[in-house]
Length: 146
Image (cartoon, rainbow, N blue to C red; front, side, top):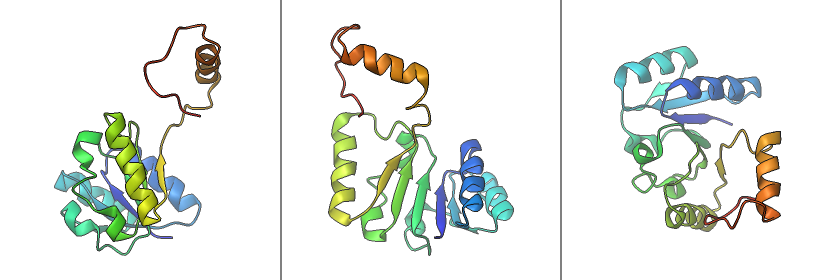
């Protein structure tokens, strides 16, 4: 399965190595900084796409978005029409309405949408989740992940 990377900063390199380890080549990359995009593309043998708008036509099946949320502009990039599964960094959105819309668009398009949350099963995270669920910390004003 061919992967495209949006945002070639530090964490993208680790994800690229993980994809390589499971046999998924990095086929395309786009970054708002040309120098960083070129460096990443050269290192991974990927095609550099100069604009996110051109990324939709890249021959990839997965798009991993590693740019900060305000930069990713998921609304401007129609990944549903591009028929790409999407992995986004946390936070997936800055508000609940945007997150819900992302899920809605993914479901409607048959797209798998994943959010990186590498600490969700850490002991400290699970301890706090149990404390919240038990009412020991008061009532949460935000939705709790399951």
